[in-house]
Image (cartoon, rainbow, N blue to C red):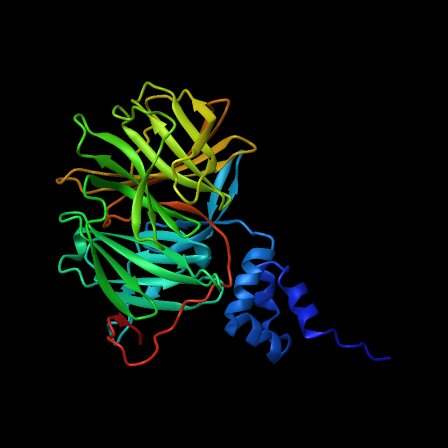
Length: 386
């Protein structure tokens, strides 16, 4: 008895609802499926829309690597160092490690950057293994912040990934286009704002804290950078007056909402707010809900340079931070805190290291089949592909 073959469109419909990590194991089933997973942009978009999301966690380690982590919200965070990921720098003919010390996550694709001295960044999809190296055109790469997002076509809704660099000295924005393989200047699209701290991506847009320099004293707000319109708009925070906040951190909840961590001073409550609604067109209609209000000991030191995860249902916060020493004692210390509504803090101290600065950071990663467009044609080539 032979099993009748299913129509191709029905097979595609079934596969579009299979979790991304399972599809990776199905590539060897047949050539048709392998082409579908590897080469079909339309299927990748359909799968991103229809398949169940798989949430996992990644962490930047002190060795400038990226490693998966297992989190028990009651007790501990286990870093799986035996399967750390690292890259060789493609500019050398012999193995030289590229020191990743900052990662931006956008829909299953990671932008791995070293903002200290490297003039290249790596765009990487951990699920498919695709990588693309991008060379910066900034004369002083050390002054740049890098962001990752995408625009979408009106008809096919195909994602067009873009990399945005911001020179913190001149506030000049540059956009890297994957379709044309070039950088172009956008000028200063935030003339009254000074970028602060580290950004994140949500639904293809970049969100970053910024300081309104037209106000005295200056006011901290959120900015949304839209990669389709290539404009920025302010996003209202839970408080109208954000002058006094010493701590502001951003996170994403289940690829759907923004979360902010706010603290006025070390003796104030540490508050975590989550968006209920964001008007994607104007970003002027935003509502927030307070999820946590923690009474933390002053010994629990949080920083603007930290990162955090939030379990909104269980009301548990996982905070990851790095502290630097002085000029005379250039040591760094990495700590993870787990804390819930009971204010009981579980501390994981990774000790003090005499290393170059690598910000220990944690992120919620969602595997995706999203493709990284390869270099094509004979246009101006500014990316590094070996």
